[in-house]
Each structure stands twice: as C-alpha cells, then as structure tokens.
Amino acid sequence: MPERANAGRIPAGVIERLPEYLNALFRFRAEGAHTVSSADLSSVTGINPAQIRRDLTHFGSFGKRGVGYPVAALIDGIQHILGSDQIHRLVLVGAGNLGTAIASYDGLRSRGFHIVAIFDAEPAKVGRRVGDFIVKDVSEMEEFVRDQNIHIGVLAVPQDAAQGVAESLATAGVRVLLNYSSSLVAVGGDVVVHNTDPVRELLHTLFYLSRA
Amino acid sequence: MPERANAGRIPAGVIERLPEYLNALFRFRAEGAHTVSSADLSSVTGINPAQIRRDLTHFGSFGKRGVGYPVAALIDGIQHILGSDQIHRLVLVGAGNLGTAIASYDGLRSRGFHIVAIFDAEPAKVGRRVGDFIVKDVSEMEEFVRDQNIHIGVLAVPQDAAQGVAESLATAGVRVLLNYSSSLVAVGGDVVVHNTDPVRELLHTLFYLSRA
DNA sequence: TAGATTGTTAATCGATTAACAATC
DNA sequence: TAGATTGTTAATCGATTAACAATC
Image (cartoon, rainbow over all chains, first blue to last red):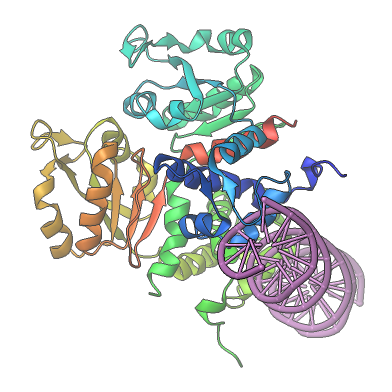
C-alpha cells in the first residue's frame, strides 16, 4: 500500500486550500459538530466537494464512507500536515502604531504563532512597554534571533528601514518574513517573503467592480 | 477585426497578474526605462515571458515587435483596464493603533485610494485628530457613505464590532471591504470582502518550511 | 437493507509554455 | 539587412469536476 504522496508532488493549490478547510472546520467545531461531509465543507468554503475530497486524499484517508470526516481528527491531521501543531516563535520589529496593533492581535497567538520579542531602532521607544513586552534595541536583534533560533520575523518598520531589517533578519537565520511595512522587501536565498500588500488585492478587485 | 475579448472570458489569473506587471513597470519607470521586453518583465516578476505576452493580448496589442513595450503607455493601459486611472474614495473605520497606522500608510494614496473620513464608536476617540482627519462618530457613517457615494471601506475595528460595521457599510452601498480586524467578516450580495488574514498565508508557508 | 458519502477513476476544462512566423 | 521581440498558434501540462463503485 503506497504511503502518502511525495510532498514535492502536491500541487501548490492544495496547500493553499488547507488553511481554508481548517477555518471551516474550526467553525463547525465551535458549533459542536463532530462530523462533517465534503458537502458541508463546500458550503462554507465555496470549494467544490469533489475537490475537497481529492485534496485530502493526497495526505491519506481521513473520512468514513457514508459518514463523513471526524471534525477533531481532521483538524489535527491538517494541522500536522502544515506543521501548525507546533508553536512557532517569531520576532516583531517596529513598535509604532502598526507594531503595537500587531502585538495585540490575538489571531496570531491563537494559531500558534508566539511573539517572543519586539525590537525598535528609536531610542525613545526602546525600554517602553508594548503589550506584554519591553521593547528591545534593534542592535540586539541579530544575536537574539540567532541564539533563540527564530525562523519567523514580522516587519512593521518605516519604509526606508524595511529592506535593511529584512536582510539583517535573513542573515540571522529567519526563513519567513511577514512584511507589513509599506515598501516591498526582497531577500535572496530560501527566505519566503510575504509582502502584505493590500493595494494589489484592491487593484484586481477594481477590475470586477467597474464591470458590475 | 475582433475587438478586445469579453471581460467575462478573461481568466482570473490574468487579472491577478496585472497588478504585478504594474509594480514591475513602476520600477522600470523609476529607473528611467522607456521600453521593456517581456523578458525584462519576467526577470522582475518571475512570470514566464510567453505568459506575459499572452496575458496582455487579452486587452489589445501594446508592444512593437523587435522593440518591446513602451513603459508609460503600458502603465496607462493596465491602469485603465483595472480602473485604477481614477481616484477611489474610501472610508476607514476604527481609529485605534491599527486605524492610525493605516491612515498614515502612504501606499494607498499613492495608488489612487483616498481616505475621505475616519469613524470610531468610542466617544473618547471621536473628535480627536488622526493624520489629517478629525474622527467622526460611527453613527454618522451610514449616511455619510451613502451621501458621498463611497464604494470602498476599510475595517480596523475590534473583533466583536467587525461584522456589524461590515453589514452597515454594505447596507450603505459599499461594494468592497478590506477587513483588517482579527475576525473574518462575511456579507451577502455582491460585496467583495478581502479578509486580510496573515495567518492563512503563514500557515501554508509552514508546509514548505518544515520540508526544506 | 437502504441511504449516504467517501475515495478514486476517467473526462473535461483551462491555463501554461514552447515555438515560430510576422514585423519592427 | 540582421537581430530582436512581439503576437499567436499549437502542444503540453495540470488542475478541476463529474461519475460511480466501494463501503460505512
């Protein structure tokens, strides 16, 4: 019996849909459901039920014919596939309005992303309290990230500082960057950068807006 | 000679790539380039040059064989296709840390998205200055949005207020919602909601992270 | 057993890419 | 003219969906 397919063979689209399934499953769990069918998941996510079933079979067999999928086990399964069954520690850089907002954002922590330190370059901000943290000086960042073996960094710094901070984090071993600053950053190697660019999304929505 | 293809026939993928081309073109323009080839655009966007050419032909013929695409004209062309050659007015709801950060975000304005008012429900915030605005009471929001014929709303409100504000904006005629609050919002009808959910992106990145 | 729903195959659909004639 | 690069066709590739046998 063949084991799960090779990770490299799994279409990117499948991986991108897994978080959607997870969202839907959390909703069903909150409503007390113990079992869901692919049709149920389809009604919440808008994704074709056949595709949901097919996506899941890439990773094994989670359901029971005639019954559906067990909510709790499927949540565990998908979280395990994504690696989100573990805590992921991250550093936040920038203690301004945006950084403060991110620090108090509960969505990250509730999904296993734990901020472990906040850095800023401004002397006036260093030493101040933001959320549960005392802001550290950015000069300590590289060493901290390296020593603590942090792989995820969140950027909420001014536009002209973003690229420098990004490179510094990459040097220190960060593998994933979530960039909330208003400039695109690009770093080489195998670092994945998510430039959170609301404008891009707005732009392609405009196309449909003007035609409706 | 057939005119441009029907908008409904243009693949969503094409529309999603247009903002990427725009980004690349802005960069080439900033560097003083007057002409770019599909290979140039490919090197910046990572998108296959044949696909770039094919995408553009959905909307007409922008280039010159043997020469390439005129940067300025192509920018104008794509902006016109997207409707981003016009100013789009929007309202921001929420004057906390996140709202303040968004109000001072220059990326929106530089791409033609103009904030015209900021609303908040907290009496302590109403009347205060945020950026160039005096925060208005959220009770005035619906009337304002309707009267001013606003089609875009940005949400930066607490989790439990998000859904209500979203519905209120939809009722008042908003067609596109950019939701920065930490809860998913859903509204019916033909309102497009962009739930800015960094967690979803982080999650599917994790999959590759754990396998590298 | 009858009804439901998965897992899986096969068919469809659409998007990507390679190749090249047209032409600047 | 020779070199470059588009616009476009044809080939490839992959993803989506429909259908259904397996089975709970």
